[in-house]
Image (cartoon, rainbow, N blue to C red; front, side, top):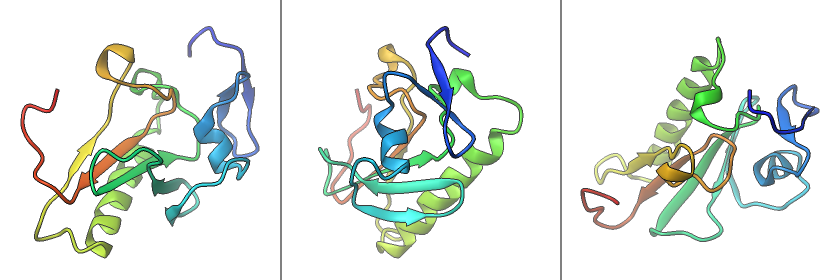
Length: 130
């Protein structure tokens, strides 16, 4: 774990004392347009979408970056991907496709330091992306 000051959340995860915006969404301190939720995962529409469909999938447990994954967290990543596929199907994207992106660290484009996936769809997505 990083040297940031941390505290235990009500969900058993940890978050920065500076206040992780995604943890605050999980704790319902900040409103979000939720499209999926289970005991471990929350998905909501991105407030600043870069595609017609732009949904964020986050674990309710605070994990700052992919480098901070611990033993057992692979189940969380599997749940994130499974939730993304379920939401994509619900949105009728199965025949059209989508992109699932996880940025890691500032150099990889990560802005919010809470592991999350972006589901992007609804337009032609070019390659390479960056």
